[in-house]
Image (cartoon, rainbow, N blue to C red):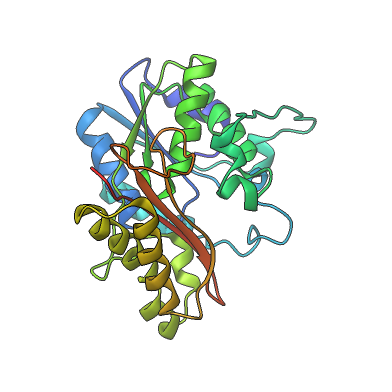
Length: 273
């Protein structure tokens, strides 16, 4: 279904698990659906490529889309309701509201290199939560900063929604699944796991008793092995605030982002238990 009226008519009064996506689904998305299916009697998935979270010059118009393929995958996965609205349905004429989470959660890292991105994320998620009214909503840890932003918005605005983080799903060589991986050439695809290798290198140093600075140096060295990858950031951050660390804390997260010629990729991993 594609309209708000159809959605509201089909929703049960309770027991809804919700998976918001931008479509072009892969096993990472289906892991969210599987978790939602286990924990809720009724599962809703949305497919909506949200223009508000794309900046000028980003890939909104070429972002991969295949609604019929998505529909078939979701039907096979046992999803009860697919909501696939158009832009005009989500943002009717005159729509002028934006939701902004302030502070380091949105100012650093992805927020610093993609101004307005998290405002777009918060706005669309808030609108979807109001429309779907789920008891639980599922987000992948692959977009870890987004997960924290959504949790903060839910807490601050009092949405009666449990935000569930689901571990990143990876290819056998460690590459985090992403719809944007389709952009990668075969040659670049072979090199793309360098992000994961850098995170593992930092985890290994931490496990051997090394310092945060030593772990960062190990991550940098791993990235330098693939000169085609242009690092945007590599950091070890607090798992709740995302502020950079100089000493280890429980759950410290390694985060990395950068660009290959065909695509920009991000990844993260807990590097200190």
